[in-house]
Image (tube, rainbow, N blue to C red; front, side, top):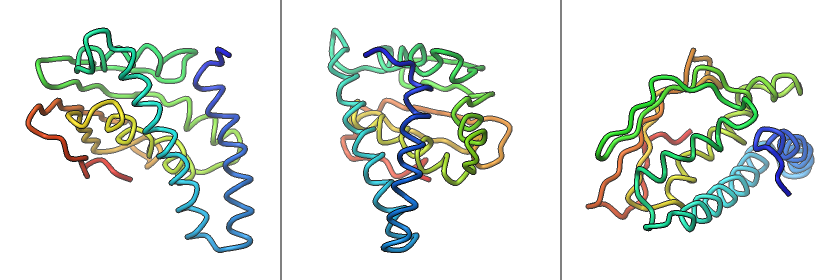
Amino acid sequence: MNIPQLERRVIEAAMLQRLKQEIERRYGADAATEIVLGAVRTAALEAGRQFAKSAPEGPNLAHFATIIKSWTQGGALDIAEEDLRDDHFTFAVTRCGYVQAYAEMGLDGEFAKLVSCSRDEIFAQGYSPHLKLSRSRTIAQGAPACMFAFRWDEESSAPSQSGRE
């Protein structure tokens, strides 16, 4: 099935919100957040691994940068200031359709961070342990743009801790 990513995330968000509410009712807010975050991260890690398998010459930064096409499909994101260099890939998300869609569903920025923003670093880790994400701000946090900076570090194989939300 070829469902645009934005549409898929809206469907997922509706189910995750219902699940989170039920877990909160039974076990409390902290447990609900932890369980939903765990599920989101597991899915993001696997998605990163699957995308890495599509790299004809193996995972590398130039191939990773092609993910922008998928991420912007269907008007999901507006991207500016895209810059790909030897070991850095940076860009700014100036409009986030995910945050907008979640708001239209009555979901707040915290929920957007939980089910959308939290995917990014883990997706990169799934793609390659050499890929690190640094993100200084997000639209879900109230910033005017999300500033992404990916770095390819051949020396590193440990997961990054920067950019976590």
